[in-house]
Image (cartoon, helix red, strand yellow):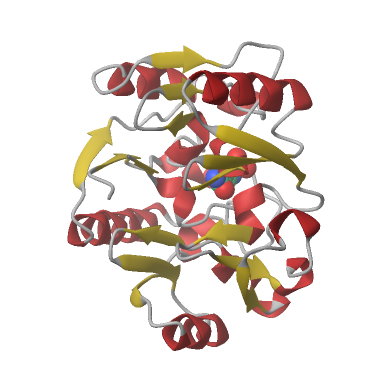
Length: 252
Ligand code: CIR
């Protein structure tokens, strides 16, 4: 069970966030409402919210998930893969130091939390434009020091591993339809998300609830068939800067 979540209020600079999408510029007023609803959903899941201060100098700082990997025994502070995001991790480290022993990914290696997917005591590490082989090796060494195993997956075209593959408990993965036959996850049952709804693959199981992006009816139907208790959240303003549901918090 998760108890806590670190979140960060978006600032106006979100409009300058890194993006590959062509959905327009985020509207900060709407983004703040969506963020508030997200925070309410985390509370409904039973989490204590730890809100860190907005960081206007970092347009993508709202996506706190990328800055740390938190386990029961330690927190590993990342070195974000995109230069404009380097520095966001400092205030998260400060916050996490009250809860966990800290370890740090050392440069020039890079690693984004969005590339790290936990399945029980095993961690899948996505190798991507953001997460280097050296970053993956460092994380793997830290994890093994604390008794966790890990393995790597090539991320390919996606921004992050969890853009398209998410573990939702009970040996079930939510994946892009195009990834159902991926060898590294062959032992799992799959909920395949059609490519026209690919954004919905980034969902997150928090205690009793599955948080899913609003507006993806095929995906929603599939989640319901599996019996998940769903909380739907409008994510339009974060989607405009390539951010998904999992990226908006660090759960531990
Ligand atoms: C970025 O490109 O870094 C941000 N615009 C989006 C980060 C999304 N984070 C995530 O998927 N964990």
